[in-house]
Length: 278
Image: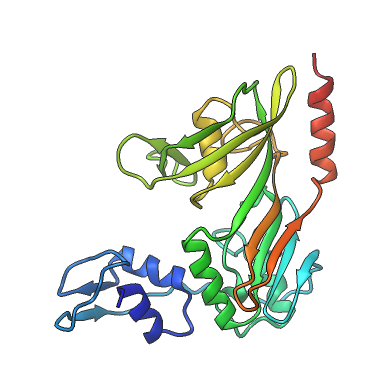
């Protein structure tokens, strides 16, 4: 049995992604050695360690959520630009997690959140409503079985589609942002498809093979076409990157789920301005 699967059985209320993160941190060792999550356990192996979970105290809040899809197992919300998904340093209220707790989802780890969108990225976010569904969704994200499609406006004119395959690591000087690297880091792959070209900008569609923090934004910066209005990797405050489509097989029912929303008004207005620029 794989180490991560074994530990998931020992900690049934913890998501697979948390288990994987704990193994990477070295919280668990096999025969005194740090191994990968996919390590195949043998009968004589000794597994030792303690799950170190990071708890964030959050209060339930009555915050309206734009629910695009919902059933007894999961829901998909349309997160507005500027809303933080999970409380962190300096942000304790007004988050998606606060809103979910306000809806009574206090029986689940992280109130059912299985993935994130950056604060300034608007769009579709999946939330589990049961522990079983949360674990299954976590495994689907790890295996990249959930297709996420983004639209973004970037600076400059991109002439051809491309696959950006560049490792990402935390920036050595600025610890809140990330950068690409030739050595080390974690592999990240972004598919870029050109939708429209303007005089000074390009409308792109992005799909992800991996799900690294700030991945699309870092990759766009690395090819010298940063996301328009990105406050951390470009200039401005109106980040024009939105998660507009989700495609996946429902982990509980087996139903094919296809969800697509329209770009926000702010995105449409920015696109119109790009079109008229000479």
